[in-house]
Image (cartoon, rainbow, N blue to C red; front, top):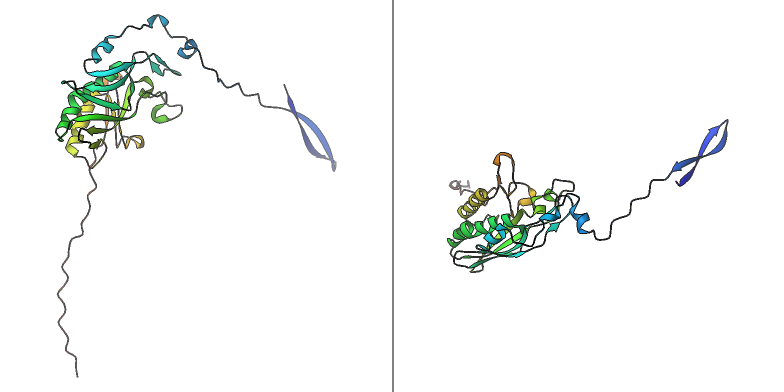
Length: 261
């Protein structure tokens, strides 16, 4: 081990005496891993390669009736991040075959993607129709990403890291209108209906009022909790009421006072 020689000056009997003391240097930092890891190293010791197959799952077959998808290979990240039955959800299909595009296209696990597509097809789209034009595009904000909740370092793995969550920002109608789900200028009864449908379909719904991270979009996921507990935290807000100053009549003018001459 290398040593640093420190010289200490001590006062003794009025004279300065130099004493050398060996101080150990800190240990060198471990090398930073810069080479790509093998699949085995990334997957970890508990990964069962016997379960890997190219055959579509039952979910992969079912979802094709209500959505346009693109299969993805198994996604592997640090800790429990990633998943096996992953796909890109490109569009939801209405009963007549009309596409509801989803942009940017999210990467999700199949069973969650199936729920998202069914919600858009059976619940969101019919509500949008009442606004005078059909739903054409859903604008997303975030999907699969290996990170902690709310991007806090060291926090519990987010459902985004499992492909089990998506953030939705707005609906775009066929006539070009963009309907922001957190836009207080959008009709409240419409947003109330979208909120209620989402909270019945998904186990977590977060929006304005949940925390600072969800003021501009809606988070949806299907996390499994004990005893079937669900979380619906979306405050459907209204524009602030503007106080109008009441017009108070002025008192009648005082009578003229005659001027003495």
